[in-house]
Length: 83
Image (cartoon, rainbow, N blue to C red; front, side, top):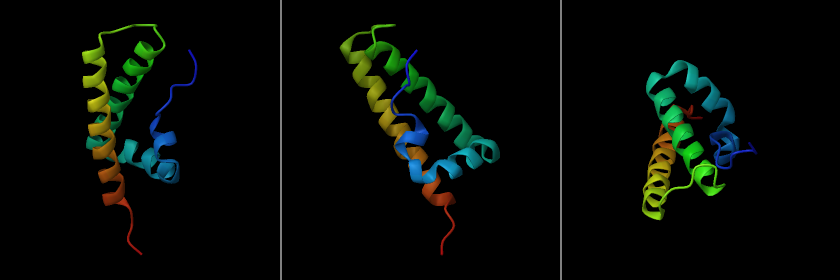
């Protein structure tokens, strides 16, 4: 399969190191990241016609991906050290 777009490291390249750290040190963040990856992979499979789905289901998944991305970004910013 080709490179899946919207990978977390592509979405937040400036926070890639923090993503890696939080995946191993924060169980809640790890669950969010895993759910994001699962939803993103499902969307990619549908978009590439590997596993097509109805338009409304795709819209719901894209909304879920956006909600998860927002929650992940908030967690990344909250974990960022202040200087």
